[in-house]
Amino acid sequence: MTDPALGFTTTLIMVSLILALETNSRLWGHLLFVGAGLGMLAKGPIALVLTGFPVFIWLFWKRQWGHFFRDLPWLTGIPLMLLIAIPWYVMAELRTPGFLEYFFVGEHYKRFVDPSWAGDLYGAPHNQPKGMIWIFWLAAALPWSLVFIGMIAARLFGYGRDRQLFNVNDRWLVLLMLWAVTPMLFFTTASSILATYVYPGIPAFALLMALGLQRGAQKELRRPRLLYLGMALVPIVFAAGVSLTHQQIALKASQLPLLQQFHAQAEPNAILAYACERPNSAEFYGRGKTYAMEGANEQQWRHLFADGAHNYAVIEHDRYQSLPPFLSKRMTEVGRYGKYQLLRETGLTQPGSDTSDSPHLE
Image (cartoon, rainbow, N blue to C red; front, side, top):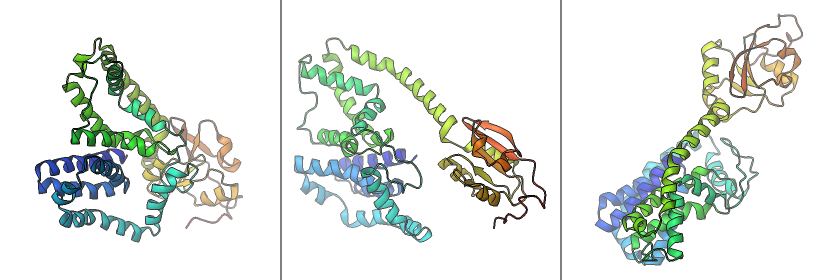
């Protein structure tokens, strides 16, 4: 997934900004623009949005405009960013005309404002309730999200000697706060979201938690049971996450094991037809030999399987009705992968039969 790469680039941008303004270092200033260029390659303009929004609010709040425009190497940094990012976008548009419109308009606008958008070529819309991003953050930041809520609650109800957990007069602390919450603010009204969208703000939240604990927040709680509970949840959450992730990959997400068997057994000119919905990973690992045939009529199947090779098909368990009758009678199972069955064509129809007049694939 691209989210870890996006998280790296947004972290590089924000850390470089802080160190460039704090030390007046041109090295860190240029690394900021390197991060911006890499962010455009990792996931596009969203890298600049997730960092630009907190920085813009911070500049207004703390009135740091002078340092921002004076201490950063704009004249050399912007060309460096463009040099890193632009060539790939140019090559992508030349190789696949229409890519720029699809990527910038579709992926970065319609994807979030229209949950039913059907133009997504590499995934599916995820229709979540609005505000679900905050629940995703609560789960993704466990156990520290619970600890943080406990620390805030302790201050609100007067359990701490100092009710001010974080000093908003600290300019860098304010920037960390804005950085940490920006992904959730940005995606609060979006429906097509994933849990991984909270990732870019997690490094800032980790720094905030470290600062809070360092300042004695844990000691100031009368009975830090929530902290202990949060720590106890670490192995439980880790084990549950590994288990669920493994099941999803094995049963749904990846077609790699199935495709590995197909490539190992199939003849060079054999094809693999999906009688069910073809997952994106099947197209990725299929080396151009997989076909999406869900909903195809019998004539289309005859056309595809008229080349005389021992071809293959994929169906969901015990759904032979998804294959046309002429084909299901001559298919045999060669493997099962989660909910999918890999079938191989064995009883080929001889020349002169009812399929001999079917056109061959070019």
